[in-house]
Length: 146
Image (cartoon, rainbow, N blue to C red):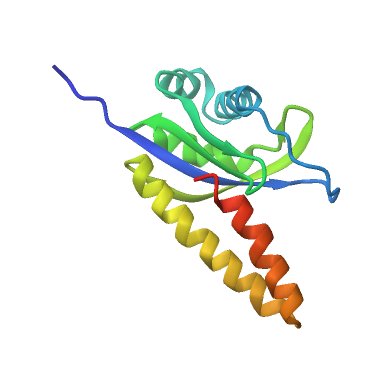
C-alpha cells in the first residue's frame, strides 16, 4: 500500500479593494479560482496535477487566512501560481503564502504564533490603555476559532 503525502499551504487573503466590508470568501469560489489560475500559469498539466487531492481545509473570514491541501510534489506548482491569483468570486483579492507545512497541526501552531505577532504589532501602535484593550478583545475573538 502506498502512502500519499500532502502539503498544506497557509495563505493570507488580502482584499484588493479598500472597502471595510467582510471578505465573504466561500471555499468553493477559492478552490475554483486556484484551479483556474494554476491552469493559466502551468497549463492543463498543472491543473491536472493539483486537482487530485486539492481541498480548502480552512477558510476564516475574520482573520483572512486559508489553508489549502495539495499532494506533495504538485504543491510546488500550486505555490508558484498563488501570487498570480487576482479574483475570488467577484472580489479582487491577493493571496500571500505565509507557510507551507506537512500537517494541519503544524499549520495551526504557525498561525497561533503569526496572530500573536500581529497582536503585538497592533499593540505597538496603540497610544492609550483603552485602545490596547479594544485591540486585544477584537483580535482574541478572531483567533478563538482555532
